[in-house]
Each structure stands twice: as structure tokens, then as C-alpha cells.
Image (cartoon, rainbow over all chains, first blue to last red; front, side):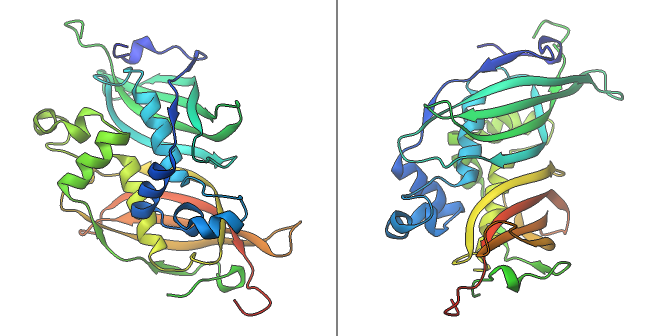
Length: 152
Length: 152
């Protein structure tokens, strides 16, 4: 649970993050503010809708998945900033009571060409529910510090 | 402010969404739950850090931008589900007091090959702040209903 600096990431490594559960009230609260579409906030509509009940906003699923990753502590002192996300796909509905975790593969570790104190770490996320069904996948690119000279 | 069904979207059309502001407390609250990295929740760290003050989580910026889009009402009765996002880039920091809006271009409208009642709408988002600085860009793909036979 300590920070990983640029040189601590190894391409090809795979790890899993902690589980975090989606509750009905969390789904409704997030969506009521950021994604108030009927399938996320209207329980009567959702019961009769495409998915047979309320489902989580995809932006909520993304945010919760990233929180689960942050809880590894790997980025606490090392991450400078997120640069972007690629190829994000929502592949199965997330329902109240589902527990999500991430399988993360270190896709690329690249020192900066211009700034010697940093580099880019690209991670490939697969978000799984309690039945190991993939509900979302994406890759992230982050600007990460090298270990400080004093040992960090 | 009424729903746009598949046949109501025109490739190449550009529109802008309403402005929504980021407050310091909203930045802190979102990040405290979903993205508790120091640049989003630790004001003392952030003052001395890369960005000279607290900045919003990129996931928060994304969620707020999508809320601004939803407030057009275009998706209210027509959107079946979001499929994915591509090429998301965070291009400038978002700070307390910034007001964000989206410039949206209709990139693609494609009827489903298998289901005659729906199709895919791809939208290219540029999120701008009050100074017209682009802070984020991405494209979205959504499964959208055709107008129901009774006129919707």
C-alpha cells in the first residue's frame, strides 16, 4: 500500500483491486446529480424498461472503479495528473448490490522525453462484478513521478 | 427541449449546452468519495503543487459535462444506453468557480443492422470553460431509439 513511482511499474504485470459495492441509494444519488436519465433515477420506468430494474450510471461505475484503484495507494504520492482514457466500453449493466473490482494490466511505462522527473503509465482496466462478468473496460494514461532522489 | 430520436440527429450539426459551474465544495465532495487524490482534496498540498490550487477530478469534470448535455433534454425518452467513450483527454485544469459547457458535434448517425427500432449516435464533445479554453474532449457512442410509430 505504498506509492509506486515510475520505475516501480512493470509492463505486463496484472493485479486486482479491492471490491466496492453499488447500493441502490448510491446509484440514485449519483445519477440524480450527474446522470438523471430514467434508467438510473426512475424506479417505476426502470422496472418495465430494457434492463428490468434500476442500473448504475456508467459515469458512476467509472468513478467507483477508479476509487477502487486509488485504494491500492499506488498513486498517492506519485501521480501528477491523469491525461486521458481510451476505448471505454460499458459491457454489462451494474445493478444495486453488485460488487465491483478492477483487474488492471500495466500496458506501458514510458519515461518522458522532455522532463527527466516523470513519465507516462498506461493501465488497461477490466471492471468485474461479483460473478466475474466484465461490466466495463478502458485504458488510462497518467503522468507519474520518478522516485525522488531522497527516496520518497 | 424535447427528445431527439435517431432520425432527429444530423451528422455535422454542432450545438452548445448550458453552463454549469464547479464550486470548491463540489470539487472536494466528489473527490472525497471517488477520487481522493491530493490535488483534489488536500488544499494545503494543492496550493504548493503543480497547479497552484485545488483542481477538479477529471471524472467529476466528465460527469458534470454529461449532465450539462443531458439538460438539453435530447436524450430523455430516446436514449437506450451508453455504449462507450473514446479518445478522452483532459487538456486544462478545472478550478473552483469555473463554468463549463460543451460544444457537441454530431459525428455519426447509424441505424442498427439488426434491430429496426434503434441505432447508434456518436457525439464529439469539447468541454470549454468561461474563457473558452478546452478543458476536456471525448466522443461518446449511444444506442438511441427511432421515433415510436405513435409519434412519441
